[in-house]
Length: 130
Ligand SMILES: CC(C)(COP(=O)(O)OP(=O)(O)OC[C@H]1O[C@@H](n2cnc3c(N)ncnc32)[C@H](O)[C@@H]1OP(=O)(O)O)[C@@H](O)C(=O)NCCC(=O)NCCS
Image (cartoon, rainbow, N blue to C red):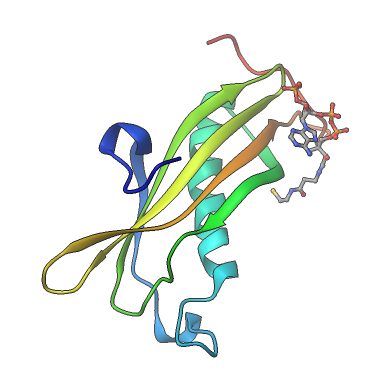
Protein backbone atom coordinates (compact mmCIF):
# COMPACT_ATOMS: atom_id res chain seq x y z
CA UNK A 1 0.00 0.00 0.00
CA UNK A 2 1.27 3.48 -0.85
CA UNK A 3 1.02 6.30 1.66
CA UNK A 4 -0.56 8.80 2.04
CA UNK A 5 -3.80 6.95 1.42
CA UNK A 6 -6.59 8.46 -0.63
CA UNK A 7 -10.20 8.61 0.54
CA UNK A 8 -11.06 5.80 -1.90
CA UNK A 9 -8.37 3.55 -0.41
CA UNK A 10 -9.71 3.93 3.10
CA UNK A 11 -13.45 3.29 2.90
CA UNK A 12 -15.73 4.67 5.60
CA UNK A 13 -14.87 6.21 8.97
CA UNK A 14 -16.26 3.71 11.46
CA UNK A 15 -14.83 5.22 14.67
CA UNK A 16 -13.47 8.62 15.64
CA UNK A 17 -11.57 8.61 18.93
CA UNK A 18 -9.27 10.83 20.98
CA UNK A 19 -6.52 8.96 22.88
CA UNK A 20 -6.08 9.90 26.54
CA UNK A 21 -2.98 10.36 28.71
CA UNK A 22 -3.62 6.94 30.30
CA UNK A 23 -2.88 5.29 26.90
CA UNK A 24 0.71 6.63 26.71
CA UNK A 25 3.69 4.24 26.74
CA UNK A 26 7.15 5.03 28.05
CA UNK A 27 8.16 6.64 24.71
CA UNK A 28 5.39 9.22 25.02
CA UNK A 29 3.51 7.53 22.16
CA UNK A 30 0.10 5.91 22.34
CA UNK A 31 0.34 2.23 23.28
CA UNK A 32 0.08 -0.01 20.20
CA UNK A 33 -2.29 -2.44 21.93
CA UNK A 34 -4.82 0.34 22.45
CA UNK A 35 -4.69 1.25 18.74
CA UNK A 36 -5.07 -2.42 17.81
CA UNK A 37 -8.17 -2.75 19.97
CA UNK A 38 -9.78 0.27 18.28
CA UNK A 39 -9.02 -1.31 14.88
CA UNK A 40 -10.52 -4.62 16.00
CA UNK A 41 -13.70 -2.85 17.17
CA UNK A 42 -14.07 -0.92 13.89
CA UNK A 43 -13.37 -3.98 11.73
CA UNK A 44 -15.81 -6.02 13.80
CA UNK A 45 -18.57 -3.47 13.20
CA UNK A 46 -18.11 -3.76 9.41
CA UNK A 47 -17.78 -7.56 9.53
CA UNK A 48 -20.83 -7.91 11.79
CA UNK A 49 -22.87 -5.93 9.28
CA UNK A 50 -21.72 -8.21 6.43
CA UNK A 51 -22.29 -11.36 8.52
CA UNK A 52 -25.60 -10.02 9.81
CA UNK A 53 -24.73 -11.28 13.29
CA UNK A 54 -21.93 -12.34 15.61
CA UNK A 55 -18.35 -12.47 14.38
CA UNK A 56 -15.00 -13.34 15.97
CA UNK A 57 -11.54 -12.14 14.97
CA UNK A 58 -9.58 -15.14 13.71
CA UNK A 59 -6.47 -13.43 12.32
CA UNK A 60 -4.68 -10.11 11.92
CA UNK A 61 -2.33 -9.94 8.93
CA UNK A 62 0.07 -7.38 7.52
CA UNK A 63 -0.31 -5.17 10.56
CA UNK A 64 1.85 -2.10 10.08
CA UNK A 65 2.61 0.73 12.50
CA UNK A 66 3.50 3.53 10.09
CA UNK A 67 3.98 6.49 12.42
CA UNK A 68 3.46 7.07 16.15
CA UNK A 69 0.14 8.25 17.54
CA UNK A 70 0.52 11.27 19.82
CA UNK A 71 -1.56 12.79 22.58
CA UNK A 72 -3.75 15.48 21.01
CA UNK A 73 -4.31 13.49 17.79
CA UNK A 74 -7.90 13.15 16.63
CA UNK A 75 -8.01 9.63 15.31
CA UNK A 76 -10.21 8.24 12.55
CA UNK A 77 -10.49 4.48 12.10
CA UNK A 78 -11.46 3.54 8.53
CA UNK A 79 -12.59 0.08 7.48
CA UNK A 80 -13.68 -1.59 4.27
CA UNK A 81 -14.30 -5.12 3.05
CA UNK A 82 -11.29 -6.46 1.19
CA UNK A 83 -12.13 -10.11 0.63
CA UNK A 84 -14.97 -12.50 1.32
CA UNK A 85 -14.84 -16.27 1.83
CA UNK A 86 -17.46 -18.85 2.80
CA UNK A 87 -17.59 -18.07 6.53
CA UNK A 88 -14.97 -15.33 6.79
CA UNK A 89 -14.53 -11.75 5.69
CA UNK A 90 -11.29 -9.79 5.46
CA UNK A 91 -11.61 -6.15 6.49
CA UNK A 92 -8.85 -3.64 5.79
CA UNK A 93 -8.54 -1.19 8.68
CA UNK A 94 -6.56 2.07 8.37
CA UNK A 95 -6.00 4.60 11.12
CA UNK A 96 -5.35 8.26 10.35
CA UNK A 97 -4.69 11.17 12.72
CA UNK A 98 -5.65 14.79 12.34
CA UNK A 99 -2.78 16.59 14.07
CA UNK A 100 -2.09 20.10 15.31
CA UNK A 101 -3.51 23.49 14.44
CA UNK A 102 -2.68 22.87 10.75
CA UNK A 103 -4.93 19.78 10.77
CA UNK A 104 -2.21 17.67 9.16
CA UNK A 105 -3.36 14.16 8.16
CA UNK A 106 -0.96 11.43 9.29
CA UNK A 107 -1.32 7.73 8.36
CA UNK A 108 -0.76 5.79 11.60
CA UNK A 109 -1.50 2.10 11.13
CA UNK A 110 -2.95 -0.39 8.69
CA UNK A 111 -3.94 -4.05 8.98
CA UNK A 112 -6.05 -6.77 7.44
CA UNK A 113 -8.41 -8.27 10.02
CA UNK A 114 -10.20 -11.56 9.29
CA UNK A 115 -13.50 -12.18 11.03
CA UNK A 116 -15.52 -15.39 11.05
CA UNK A 117 -19.32 -15.40 11.24
CA UNK A 118 -20.44 -17.45 14.25
CA UNK A 119 -23.51 -19.56 14.90
CA UNK A 120 -25.19 -20.02 18.30
CA UNK A 121 -22.58 -22.66 19.23
CA UNK A 122 -19.72 -20.23 18.51
CA UNK A 123 -18.78 -22.22 15.40
CA UNK A 124 -18.26 -20.87 11.85
CA UNK A 125 -21.46 -20.16 9.91
CA UNK A 126 -21.76 -19.34 6.19
CA UNK A 127 -22.02 -15.65 5.37
CA UNK A 128 -25.37 -14.54 3.99
CA UNK A 129 -25.31 -14.14 0.22
CA UNK A 130 -24.22 -10.66 -0.85
C1 LIG B 1 -13.03 -18.32 14.83
C2 LIG B 1 -13.17 -19.83 15.06
C3 LIG B 1 -14.63 -20.17 15.45
C4 LIG B 1 -12.82 -20.52 13.73
O1 LIG B 1 -12.84 -21.89 13.95
P1 LIG B 1 -12.01 -22.87 12.98
O2 LIG B 1 -12.26 -24.27 13.43
O3 LIG B 1 -10.61 -22.37 12.87
O4 LIG B 1 -12.78 -22.65 11.61
P2 LIG B 1 -12.35 -23.01 10.14
O5 LIG B 1 -11.05 -23.76 10.06
O6 LIG B 1 -13.59 -23.68 9.56
O7 LIG B 1 -12.14 -21.60 9.46
C5 LIG B 1 -13.20 -20.68 9.37
C6 LIG B 1 -12.81 -19.58 8.43
O8 LIG B 1 -11.74 -18.84 9.02
C7 LIG B 1 -10.66 -18.77 8.10
N1 LIG B 1 -9.42 -18.79 8.87
C8 LIG B 1 -9.08 -19.65 9.84
N2 LIG B 1 -7.86 -19.36 10.30
C9 LIG B 1 -7.43 -18.30 9.60
C10 LIG B 1 -6.23 -17.52 9.61
N3 LIG B 1 -5.22 -17.78 10.43
N4 LIG B 1 -6.14 -16.48 8.75
C11 LIG B 1 -7.15 -16.18 7.90
N5 LIG B 1 -8.33 -16.88 7.84
C12 LIG B 1 -8.43 -17.93 8.69
C13 LIG B 1 -10.81 -20.02 7.23
O9 LIG B 1 -10.13 -19.84 5.99
C14 LIG B 1 -12.30 -20.06 7.07
O10 LIG B 1 -12.72 -19.09 6.14
P3 LIG B 1 -13.73 -19.44 4.89
O11 LIG B 1 -14.87 -20.25 5.43
O12 LIG B 1 -14.20 -18.08 4.44
O13 LIG B 1 -12.92 -20.15 3.89
C15 LIG B 1 -12.20 -20.34 16.17
O14 LIG B 1 -10.87 -20.33 15.66
C16 LIG B 1 -12.27 -19.46 17.41
O15 LIG B 1 -13.24 -19.53 18.14
N6 LIG B 1 -11.23 -18.65 17.62
C17 LIG B 1 -11.23 -17.71 18.74
C18 LIG B 1 -11.87 -16.39 18.29
C19 LIG B 1 -11.65 -15.32 19.32
O16 LIG B 1 -11.81 -15.55 20.51
N7 LIG B 1 -11.27 -14.12 18.84
C20 LIG B 1 -10.90 -13.02 19.72
C21 LIG B 1 -12.09 -12.28 20.25
S1 LIG B 1 -13.28 -11.82 19.05
